[in-house]
Length: 420
Image (cartoon, rainbow, N blue to C red):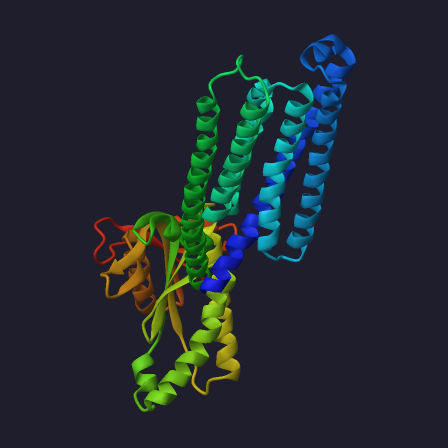
């Protein structure tokens, strides 16, 4: 992924988080406004004991309502930006920071002025500034979060200074306590900025990792089953076990057929022959593991236990396509041999840092190869193991048992089945 594309992805994620941030704050303010109105209606005495000036509580209601309107307007702007799939403009970020930071202090200034008491510097409303600073990290920009903390600190310091210079504060804590609180807001903004930087880095890594994963899946999905792709990405290319059916195919008398042809003609013949064969395998969710010039190895892997059926259908389609090609494409008939066995195989990348190749191994691989070789001795096109046949005999009821046979490299004898 190019740098511009990566930045665009991150910007779009910021738009999504901004929508969520606004919705959360709107919800909090709506709940706060409802609680405030409830207290005014059902506990008027408590309200009158708290506020001397009747305008104060009305200002609280107006401020909360105004803040909700501002956030709803911001949510509308962000919705428009999201629909256009554009990043948040820089002006919006600064507008958001300023509005979120200044509105609570407008309420605080007038409350202290009308009540003539600096005790409201300890108002619970001040606590709303903390989540405002924290969630600014979602902009994934250090300077936005730092400016948020710095602006809140600056305005709070001015309010503190004005209060202690204007009103009697003997019943309050020393001014240094409030200035220290202001400094903590600045520290919180700095920390939020550092968190924003870290989130941006991790999001960048996550997007790159997902992009690489998507590229791997895109590359392998044309050759490998979904189950193998999933296992490869989960193990990072390390070896893993998986149930599979393994199919070997060989072209009879290949050397004799091509010995008089030029390299270009051999390549043309191979492409013409293997193209339809590979389609048969891919159409049945199989994977081409290896092409050997005169044959190929394919596997059908799945966690669902349906690989024998896929392998059977692929082999059946292959023989049908070979028959069609013999009638229309070749002057001399082509014969093939197919061997299939199923079981648990080992799959993964083999090699070093210079070169790696995906490969499969295990008894099913050796067995399928030996069965394919035996098709020459039994003069047939298709041999499978009894284990495989038992899994697909509902599809192929014309199997003929050739008895137990000792396969080269396999200790135990195995019953083999000839299919028509």
